[in-house]
Image 1: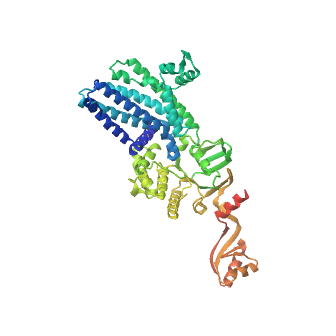
Image 2: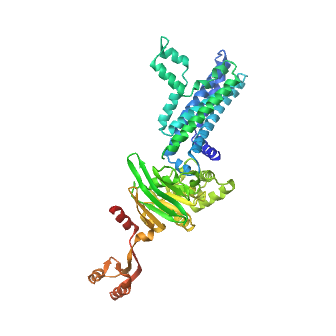
Image 3: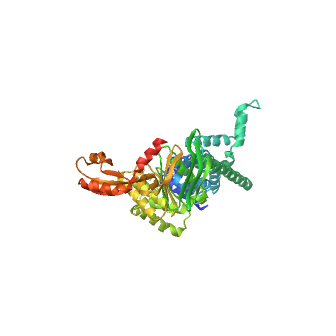
Length: 256
Length: 295
């Protein structure tokens, strides 16, 4: 575990020094001003609007970070040859991949925590009200990002970063397609078309990212069953483990 | 003899390209082994197999008895890649401590080990500099420091002086000579034949994936049991000596071992100064070209 943490630390320090966090700060400034703006324009349901925009922004930012960092992390290390002296150390490639994953997930987690904390402070100041369930929504998005980053990391062990990014985006969109969408747009007269069949097959093979979206329940104050959250956690962890095993296998077979 | 490296019938192919064809190689503990060959001969592939970055298609290699590529084998290794690149945004000290800890050093040993490694490559004064602020020669010296930091039994250096200016090349060469004196096993590939000739005890010449020769350096350079007499003379001494049946070239006379005294007399009688008397040897460059062109 120790070598994985060391590699994670290196990946994290590198991400911080490359100032990717400046985007996080920029978004945080916008989100801080959000409750104030919503109040000024006198929109009804200010709190709901703030929660919706805040969670959507944090969620999308997390997805972008997961797609980007998950796709470039390993190939960049190989292209620049920075991985060579590192992998010549008594470290397995599996450990290296876990280290990379942990490093990028720590960065994404810190970024999302910062954004959500900003919104909570801002809501407390300008709306006089804070919903602690925003943290739950962010945690669910973080789990989604963990799975998405694992998808990209796996593909990046045998394909180029753009390919890994495109596949990650494809998996995110297709894996998250609601069945209602497929039925509404890809069925003809209630009958399954070939394109609907393909979409449903792919949807079944890929992680279902819709399961991580608890935003609507949080925005509208609906209850969320603890059992559902536990099931989603197990589902997310299982996908991460499966993808990391696949990544270890493909990366282990690869000549550098 | 304890073997630091053992390569047995290793073959490596990249699709249609055969990089190594049944390579057999042994390097003893404490040896300084020079691995030379033209570009594309398979030197880097061999080194990558030893470090576990590439897997052989068939055959096997081991480092101090542990199969190459395993964590156990890599515990004995310090590796400087060809054209090394490091996380340039990190400082020299940070990255060196990272490598020391990754190699499994105890926390208490990390500080002294890093200080010693930086001292060995004369980079102590740049500990707080970021890697990108170092010159190319300094980055190469840092590379050797990171390879050395965990006090490995075997140091693998892939073209350590490649692309460096003469001054930096000399600095690297001096570092390797110092390490050799400390008894570390060193396996290094290079295109600088003079440097290899000065540093190595044993040598391997690789060409098109085959090992043409693997032997002590002396065996390769010693042509026969004759003696070369270096001299300085004026006029047409060389022509005169040749006319008398001597094998003479500019400033050198090659004679049989039992004919040295007669040769010295011949030189003195013609007013020549004798500069050296040494076994007749060829340079590594001559031996290399002869072997490679005949292959």
